[in-house]
Image (cartoon, rainbow, N blue to C red; front, side, top):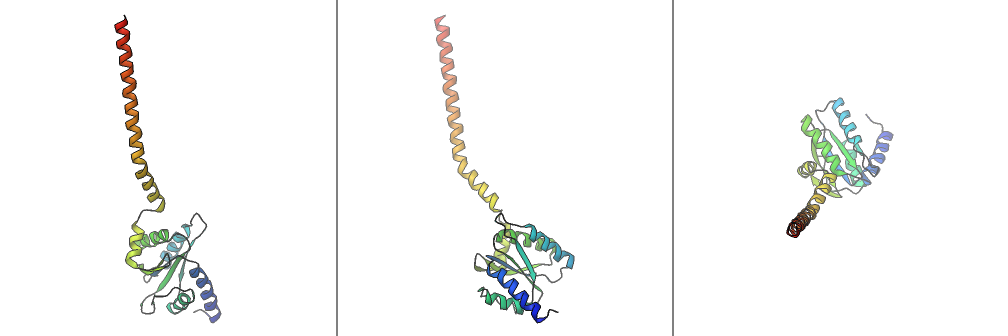
Length: 183
């Protein structure tokens, strides 16, 4: 049981983190062992963005989380009706990486549940977070776009190369014919 001072400190700490977060995911971790919860936290901490942001994961009482959400301007969520243990994951950078990590943990343990959250400032339901988690990473998507854009250019380069080889071959054939005719 947390003392009143510890609760105030927790509210200030998590409140500041959530206020600066563009991505927040609420999870029900009922049934997870302490080892599994620790493993999830470690996986989330590994997801450090190139800009230096990291992902936090806090177990918190619903009543405190409601106060924190109201204070940080994240409204529209009523977690008080949820009957279970609640934790919040938050990131100021890459919500997709956080969603992927949490969703892979949901699939592997079958104990963790995604309840919903905020992505890019908007309220999102659990199904949409799961869909986001299934998308390829940003780097893979950028690579695919570059390949699509480069495909016509490389095709044109191959065609032009084929034409130039035919022209050279034709010129060589004509030169040989002229040499044979001269002899």
